[in-house]
Amino acid sequence: MYRIAPSILSANFAKLGEEITNVLDSGADIIHFDVMDNHYVPNLTIGPLVCEAIRPLTKATIDVHLMVEPVDRIVPDFAKAGADIISFHPEASNHIDRTIGLIKEQGCKAGLVFNPATPLSYLDHVLDKLDLVLIMSVNPGFGGQKFIPEALNKLTEVRKRIDASGKDILLEIDGGVKADNIAEIARAGADTFVAGSAIYGAGKDSDPHRYDTIIAAM
Ligand code: DX5
Ligand code: ZN
Image (cartoon, rainbow, N blue to C red; front, top):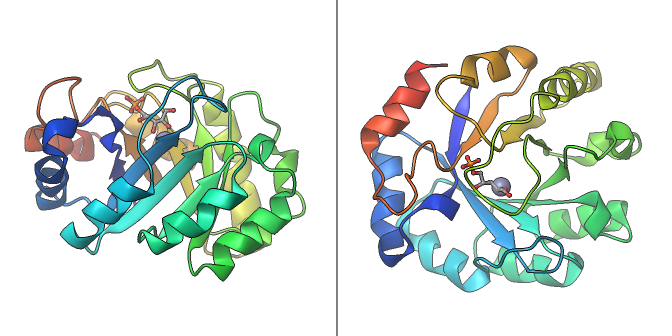
């Protein structure tokens, strides 16, 4: 099953609740929540307080993408704030297996994120413990960047590993996903597609038609 995860990074933050309700009404059942710390990535966004504020709006999955370093001490705060999935970058954790365990102990699903230049060998000893693998098709830090095509090979490789594991693990892609490349990305093996600027135009309010357009292109 294919799912679009609208990234609220490109939403109009002055009316975030409405912006989220719009995409949920269009059929979205995952909200991608980008957390940046001006340390691991050169940008600063939203934290647990905002997650807590949007939690009562929906039962949809809140998919928290942590671009923060260190990771562990913020995990319980996001779990308490109602996150369903918490993903982190291996470079931002001193002990990847421990961080995965911590996320699961807190009752959340755990995801590991791969930057364009991060090797897939980080999956070698932990794949079975993961609920999600997130392949970055841009360098993390900003919405509205261009899709890096090398991510397609990575998706295909991870799809093979997930299928071989026999586990139910989501394969998510993040960065530069648009109506004109989503079908190719799906063919490469992704099943969950983060879309920020393709759904929420920068500075403009979300338009349900943008969600429909991207779904139709699948
Ligand atoms: C980038 C973020 C993305 C971002 C994607 O670091 O992780 O989730 O919102 O935005 P678009 O879809 O505009 O590339
Ligand atoms: Zn993201």
